[in-house]
Length: 325
Image (cartoon, rainbow, N blue to C red; front, side):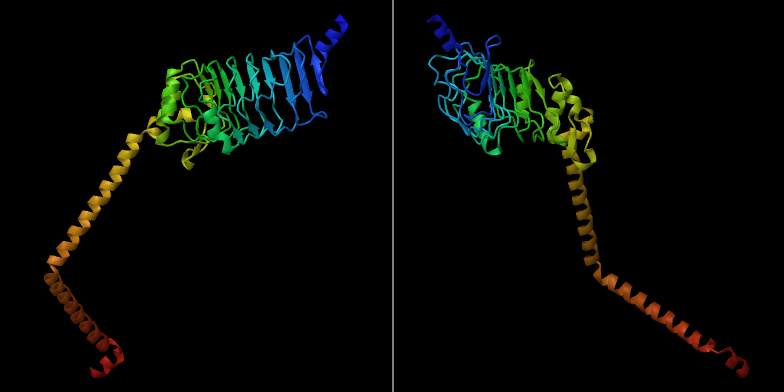
């Protein structure tokens, strides 16, 4: 009887590999493709599920087991997941690490991560499609992940940080590598100044190095919160392409200087326009004298041309002049 109970506790789900010593259960590809494994051993602390082609994580997807799971690490990468329904991770209250990398998330419920008070690391690399970015913003704004230390969002074509504020988390690492950031908003920079312990990775983003980059530029200069600062390069404008952001000159991102230059050009244009108007007015007021002056020049030119014409007729044939003599 005791042996039967022991075997039941150690039963491994179909198409999975179990290692009780490390507490891990690994399920890849298998015949039950599209479904999460059920009846996991009680001792499971690490669950890896890959290649299952599951389109959605349903509400209470981890509540099918007879007992509450003690899983601390859950890897669901490369499963083609498109939708995360509300309360999908209920029953995983002890979860510390959740890896959802390399999926195709089109829909993320605002309550997708509800019930994960102990979550410390969330990986969403190369998973969030453009239509789900605003939904991710909502899902990360409910203050249900207050213990989150690491958030990985690499390769998602993000143009802004999908966090309402940094105060709702206990973030120590934010990975934003290989996205579409042209700048970091001024309000985000202000929040980063207040989170001195936070490290932000930003390499492989197409930064637009103009005066809008000023706040972010001075944050890079005055803090050590960006470990990969030496890999941040300008994408635009053309004359700064490939230049390191940290090696830009202060005047390259000085909005006041740029505005002053623009004002100078406007002022120069106004002065030239006034000079042109004054010149036209002088011409108009002196139109009579100018007309007489032009007539005099024309008459003088006509007299001169008649003299040249007469001399030409006289000197046109030197032999006739000799005969006349």
